Image (cartoon, rainbow, N blue to C red; front, top):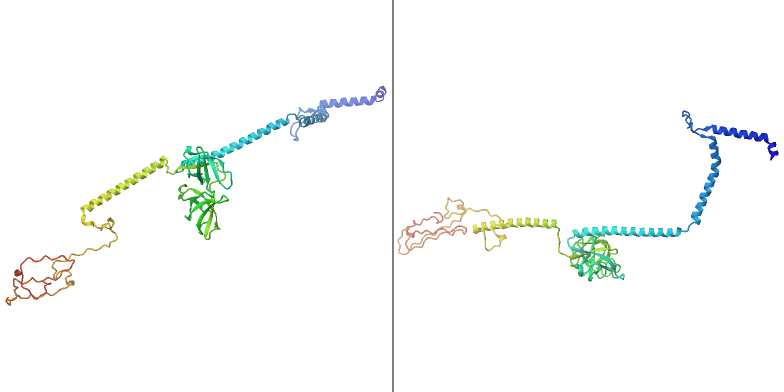
Length: 427
């Protein structure tokens, strides 16, 4: 050791002095954090160079040590220390499943609430009394299309009651139990309903086929029937009220069994394969709201006032007819009376004819004039022109039937003037 120090003493002293000088400069000199703008004054509170150098020397190994530590901890926690990970995963999976079930239940409740709200609104506005029921079962075969509801005879249900939804008809009640009932859907082959096409007013019988489709049978070929035409209940089957929606025409095909006949395939308005709630029509007597009853009462009062006014008019006419009996013919009906019969032509009034027309009477020239026969003198009478007392009165010319009969002269024949050669029609 001594030979080394003795041999390199000068160099070592120089190095020590350089290091001391550098350290003194590093302690005295500060690194300013002045910006790039030369107008800004330098920062007097800068970091000393000795500190910066120490940071440069210490930071890399410290960073390496810190990274190695974090990597070792990650490897330990993620790969070696996994004692409770499976239990936590199991608990988290159960929590996720529970939340999914709750979400599905809430979604189903929301949908059911919407359906029930729509059904309640339809039930309140519908004209007939209905009972809401829940569908809880179906038939065990594909050929039989029946389902069960949770209402029965205890809820005033009976056979052949119509089952509907706000969208359209569904079927009819077939069997009734105390707290349940069996419903036969309209797409069953043994079911049926009287329907009418809205546009063409064609009536037919609706039933289901083996494939569960709705079809209208026994219809003659008609070019007016087009797809998309609405189909409604006709009301003739005494089960479904008139005017309920059934569906729309899907297509028209020829009847394979009979010529000149067609089958009208109908797309149902109600969802027959996904029913949850239905309505059963228990009474076909119309029911009205208080406002509707008030409107009907007002209408009836108006009709009553009009009827009373008409009665008063008839009474006044009857009183007038009694006062004018000559205007009524008892042998004719009321509508054929002269005052009421408008089919009779209007005849202008005619002027009355004179009883004894003469040459100064208007229209006397149009009347036929018959010459008067001379009086025959009686035997044993004189040759004078005077008539004997036993002579017959001179005959008068025939009067017009429309003219009133002339009053015969009450004077005796002897007091009449002597007959002249003028015709008797001209006096």
